[in-house]
Image (cartoon, rainbow over all chains, first blue to last red; front, side, top):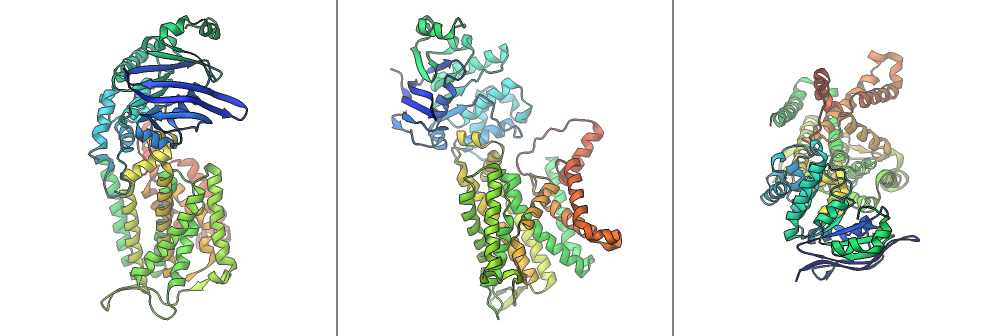
Length: 249
Length: 336
């Protein structure tokens, strides 16, 4: 049986009178990609924000490894093993690729009081950063300023930064956005490889990619779950087809 | 590597120049350079916040002035206090106020943060301005300057202008080296990350608030060092040391020199002081010297427009313009 790493139960988020996320429950298990799809404004990114701790939930609970983390702030959740990427690339453009990853790896070994010691010579965070960049396919770009990378490479760097924090759960918000065909293939290959030892939640609009890589799909409409299950079952669901009005599901 | 060697060489040449200046300069220039080095220390402290962490603090004068007042108030009236306890005590007063100000103001962002820090500084200003504690607008005098004495042997007498000059130079060098080391450490790298993208830093696992608060306290303590030196140098403090004019001037210094560079903060302080003296000169500008603030303001506006990376970036900007090549920023946070 697959190991459930992150469990959300009846997660709710209200913005005034708007129910952005309405009693959503899902399990993220190691070795599987759980895609969350839906039209714009369906609440997908808000759900990711709640799971990562960026937004507090108005109701419901989030548990990591069985521990209730609902009230934990985002940095604590990140250190506990929840990594996330954003819709918009959030790298440090002035830093080199290696320094981006090193800074992310530093989150696990902060030692802020060691003001005399050079961060670039850290014996813990530098190897972790190299390994993460290598795994994300950026091994040849370590010394390059991140701001000069292509769009696809920036998205890879975003994943590498997540990996540098040694997470078990990856919450990826539209990692394929704006990518060309070749870059999409590279990213899908990376996600397929990462899935072996991570639980991945994937918010994505590219339906071809979603149905190729996802093991479980949850469809959201107006903040609530419309359907959830294996890709074939979701594809065959008449309610999903109706909600998408002939979109390529 | 070559760039780092160039930076180190420029810093060493500047330090050497300052070290030999008293041998060639007259007493007026020694006094002016001493005062400018003190402002450079305050500029370095603000650079840690603005250039290093992305926190535009408009209340740096509060730390400067409070440490100055602490130095005077804590000194005995008729005996020379020991530098060994008076200096740390004055810095501690500034750091404590920075802790108080930072703990509350860091809960705000952007323009609100700027306004809240200004409000805290003005609070401190009115406390010394309107109460007997600070001597009102007249200020208060430091009658006997501190000394460094060990086992009856006088190591340093700050009543001597030359000793004061070299002590201020040593403090400037110490503050510069400390901040350079700090910014390349894990703490400093985290501050640079917070400056660029705080949201990403939190998502990565950094609780950013304690980092920013620590930077605020360190900055306050270093500004307090400047305030202590100023009080000891002049033997006098008044509420103007805490005024928003000084906070604004220090902010202009680091912008003029080039944000994100410790060398820029020092260069900016010297450029500001030189421009001030230049435009005040009646020998050069005649009756227009009365309007030196106008000339200074116009010069600063022109330099910010023409040198967006400040004086420290003027050389590389010129080279890139001459070669007609685009300049790619690869500097990470604060450089030395």
